[in-house]
Image (tube, rainbow, N blue to C red; front, side, top):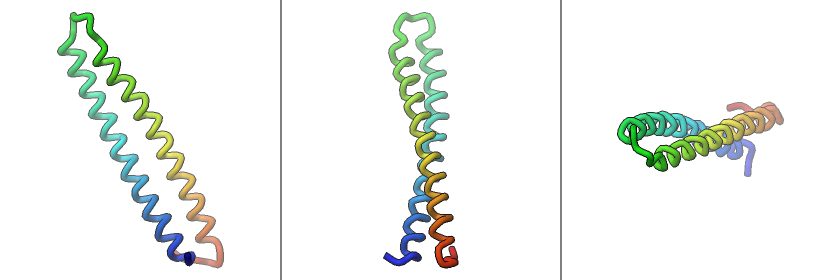
Amino acid sequence: MSAAELISRLLQAKAHLDQAGQLIRTAGSELHQARALIQAALQGTTDQSTAAMVDRSSQQLGGAGVAVGQSAGKLEEILTRVRGLGGLGN
C-alpha cells in the first residue's frame, strides 16, 4: 500500500470516527430526554427499572464516546507521523 493510499484510508477512518462521535452525542441527548419522560410518566410508582436501564445505557454510551474520542486522537497522531515521512501532503 502506498503512503497516499494509507493516508486516504486513515482520513476515511477519521471521518467515520467523527461521525460516530456525533451520533453518540445525539444518542446521549435522546437518552436524556427519554429519561425525563420516563421519570415523569412513572412518577409516584415504585417501578423505576426502565429509568435505571436508561441510566445504564447512558453510562455505557458515555464510555463509548470517550473511547471514540481517544481513537480519533490516536488516529490524528498516526496521520501526523505518516504525513511527516518524506514530506507527504494531504
